[in-house]
Amino acid sequence: MGLVLRLLEVRGVSKRFGGLVALHGVDLHVNYGEIVGLVGPNGAGKTTLLNVISGIYRPDGGRVYLHGREITGLPPEAVCRLGVGRTFQSSQLFPNMTVLENVVVGAVFGSGRGGFPLGDWRCGDVLEFALDALEFVGLADKAESPARELNAVEARRLEVARALATRPRLLLLDEATAGLTPKECLDAMRLIERVRERGISVLMVEHVMKIIMGVSDRIVVLHHGRKIADGPPKLVAEDERVINAYLGERFIL
Ligand SMILES: Nc1ncnc2c1ncn2[C@@H]1O[C@H](COP(=O)(O)OP(=O)(O)OP(=O)(O)O)[C@@H](O)[C@H]1O
Ligand SMILES: [Mg+2]
Figure 1: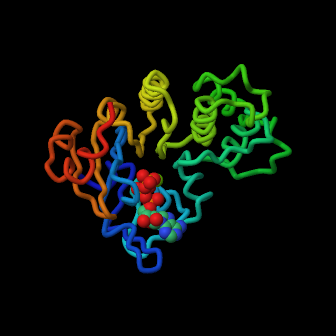
Figure 2: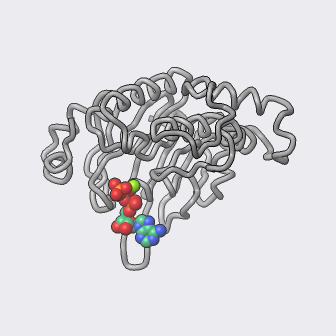
Figure 3: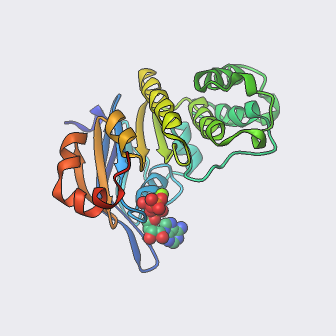
């Protein structure tokens, strides 16, 4: 398949922290409209890979392409403006700002916007983007509440809303369901499916196998910084190496 048919293409990416090799020549791609699950044991390199894609870390080797354009080494704000939105493994909200203001930050600095001064945010389509994202995740009625007053589920949804307000083509989710109950996880799954219906591709790190298996078109498995499997959920779940490295110890239903 040609490069331009792929929204995201990661080629041979390596990342070291001192003597520790966190990523070792990882290849990964996300096609247009695809939901890809990224799994693996703790310390496998999943968050590091999202950080390389989103520009937080510059890789020591390899290249990253978005929509056929090389984005390796671009700063996070540039990668965001080119259409990559993300959430964080541990919440990175602005607790003293309102729910709406948190999302406005995404809308101001996101795709297609120049990042104009925050003081002007009630102008143009920024407010429209922000309100739309809040509505989408079901938080519109909390718009004026301080973010610190949200419960864990709402805070997770707000992170997704802020990322969506940047108008991404690709959404990176890092354990968006951490700490949620099974029922809340199902709601999160439906939300991710609705994100895809908007034409946004998703690369998601997730430990809850029921979610990963249920929602992903394809699953990529990392182990000690190397990719050990890449394929349809059913095949990956039956893969001997994956069972030994990950599923055996981590299968959660
Ligand atoms: N900034 C950093 N400095 C030094 N080491 C790091 C840094 N970030 C990650 N690491 C190390 O790189 C390895 C991969 O970490 P990473 O956070 O990517 O794993 P992960 O797959 O996301 O794990 P988890 O499931 O626990 O979130 C780990 O050994 C971790 O300690
Ligand atoms: Mg992680």
